[in-house]
Image 1: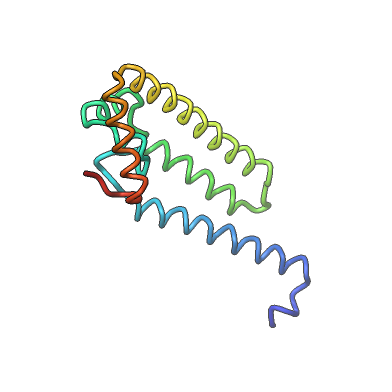
Image 2: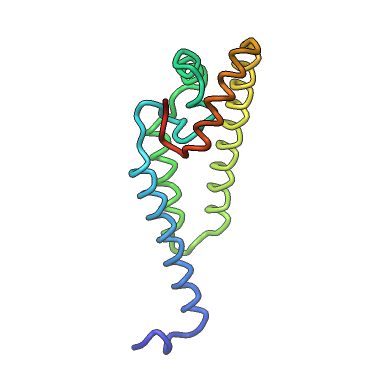
Length: 145
């Protein structure tokens, strides 16, 4: 039985399922390959990396470390929703909406914290921070002084 003999709507379903599976595999592989244990939760963020060590540590303490078990449980729920038969698009939509809200909340807390850090700096310290930030952006991710 060839792919072309399968009814069109089932071919679309199979291709969509393949695309979702590839997306999940890509997310897992990216998470596993992009590990930076020095700054959990802040990987690749030049705004944090350009901070002096003491400020970066204080920011990390203020925002807290992500709960890995909670993140794994949420990811397992996402995988279960993708694999569910019958597939429940609303359940998956709800899980993705919760992840989006969690990310937006973390981003808002980060913005508040980084603005507070920068507000506590004098003009010279902010200028030095801006210089380091500019250098990091020019060099690309993963490189520090």
